[in-house]
Image 1: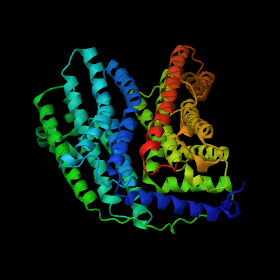
Image 2: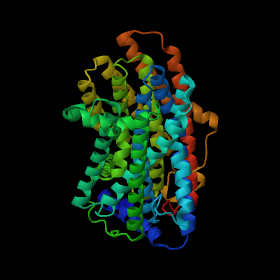
Image 3: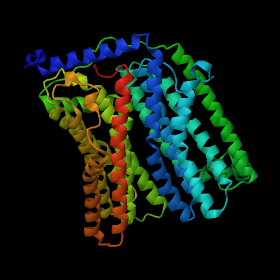
Image 4: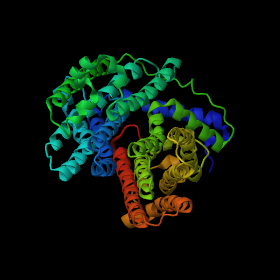
Length: 533
């Protein structure tokens, strides 16, 4: 039986589908009833999403802190971990504020001053996202205390974790205030602001990295004022982070200074956000006339649509940038540790990116699941839909990751074996993610997308089958990168470590699939922006 839309051309059908989607979203935003239910669902969604990142944080902290503390680079490990926490705090804030706006809540995650009405929202974010993020420096401090016997580092690292989380949250709120509330999403000014927002976050990340990890970074600037610079050495951010492992008066004064500064920024950003969100100065457009596309075929047009929206959406853009950022990050760590890469380190690179891509699968899967009903108006089958999404995601990887790999490799003078190894690991990670997305969507989407129900997305696989499936999907990239490295360098001593990493990756990918189904079930029950039942 053909649907009425089958008689339309694909361009008209797609624009009609988008209009219907926007009408549905705005209708949910305008409804005043059920606000408490939506708030509870959103809190639960953020809580599960952030807590599901704990395995990634724990593995990241263990490998970075464990390896660098063992080699005597304690402060380097803590600085890197705090950098990661800062960046993740910014990303979670931007993502979560966008989620609140999409659901029509118009409330900040952590409003200041905190009123009783929004205390539940604030505690929800602190106990979910904040608690998960704080694992990064805390686990590193425990490792450091265990190896050195200096247990005072544990509360100090916890304090620095809180301060870094506040700074990251403040920067995320500040970016939201500067751009999201003052410019239309589809205006020329809004597009420019989104690129500035993304570029600013990357520049801040790199600048913070060099300030914290290069002790002599400011020396040329301070050399003419040697006497004054020594007396003002507590102003140097690197010394503030040294208070984790050293407790001299200079470092403690620096900690007090930056602690007050971060808290003040947080208070100002929170207060401004509170004013903007309670009295928003932006208006949501009811039209979609700006969305124009040339349709030349199902796959070509839909992939083009995904690529276009990925570039236009700052939230998705940052999500895609996670691929090259992780590769860049591991390159920087490698340079700090002496520029040597072993087979075990190479597999750690893959493991880290595989974990990150696994959690990225959750985001992509949930987003596509929520919008799957839009595709029901298009003449496309569930297999076409799933394959198209996989191809779109995979085509984005070389656009971002390949230039990053080449640029960093040339800059750091890496050899061909290392570059090839990174390409294999990176593409393997991207393809693994796409296979998981494609298989998951194809397994759970019905043939007629207009009748998606809660039961359709129910758990159809036992945990054992999930583990087997994730093992197949995540196993071959490890073997591929091991094989390439063995062909180039012929080491034979890291096979056991690679098998262990394969097991860990398989388990984590399986957990990601389970978290995906769990989150979607919760969203399907109570979110107003999900598909029609």
